[in-house]
Image (tube, rainbow, N blue to C red; front, side, top):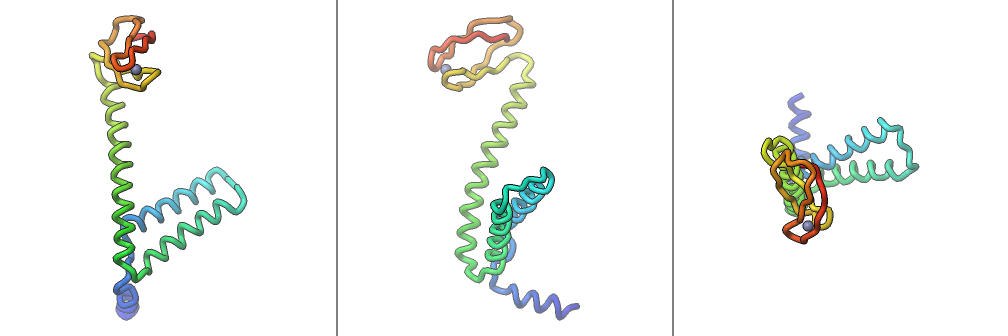
Length: 140
Ligand SMILES: [Zn+2]
């Protein structure tokens, strides 16, 4: 058994192996596979090819000896991932915070999407957006 692991270790020496992008590719693969099976979706060859491509990409990067290039790819992916994570987490936490605010109610201007804050329980009032001067009626 030791020999077996030693052989794997030697084989993997100088190869890229797991990184965040590799894990993301695998997660995406299983997620898409699950969705495909769960909904019994059959769009012909396209989902099959996408899944196959994800697996090929994963194994290509896993066994790649061009570690420097794979690291650059991983860095690009992590930059992209951090932007997504930041935006999603900030949006969700803002929405939760606004929904739980006992004093103010939050509105989005229908014209410019600006966030407006008004005291609760004032009944139906006309709201004028301070950014674009658009007036709309909402229950506070
Ligand atoms: Zn506005």
